[in-house]
Image 1 (cartoon, one colour):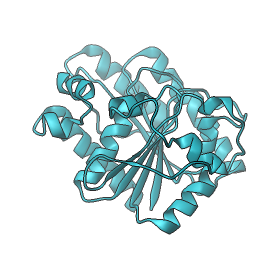
Image 2: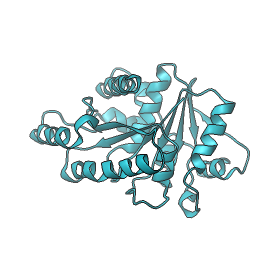
Image 3: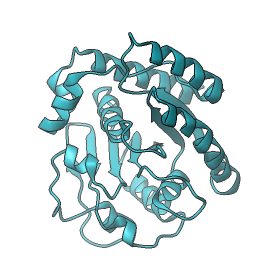
Image 4: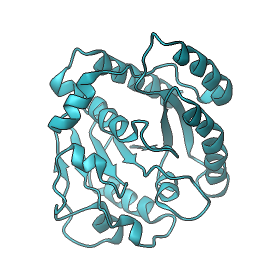
Length: 249
């Protein structure tokens, strides 16, 4: 079983959409996948039309309360619902890892995707750091704009600190561009800049902007359900192939 955290230090770059479609792509490939909504905004849960009053959430999971319950969204896809009150509680750095290890001993999973909150990794024990301490890999979407590119230089040192001090097995899969308009001059310029800054952590695959992604979100579905032959559908499959190649190496 591999645990992948999808994390950014800036909101609005498609982190949750990435988590949804990463999980959906793995499940389409026959990989039994669980997505954990670890963001108090609950956008992933909303995207899957999981109600606010769902009786079991990630807060129950990490606090060992309530009756364990997941939402099935396909033959190989499971969702652990988010909780708006998750940030109000104080957790230890390895609380989520402990529960994931217990879960893995009781059910067969190939991948766990953690949708992290868009917060800086400040060194305090926040949800992002707790997620990375429970993970094997990190993936980070970026956009072709200045603030997003600057985030590369901010995120990498924070990840290195966590690797050095708390989770030596953690590996950075890389940054990839999301919501791309390929025919713009900006994309080429920012792509070159990101390659220079991210180095070995730059992923060649990018996700093109596609109206079908927004349509799928409104319907509480994935791109594979509403437009399986769309360009975004093909891009997500290519992204997962590149990720799997990196993991296998």
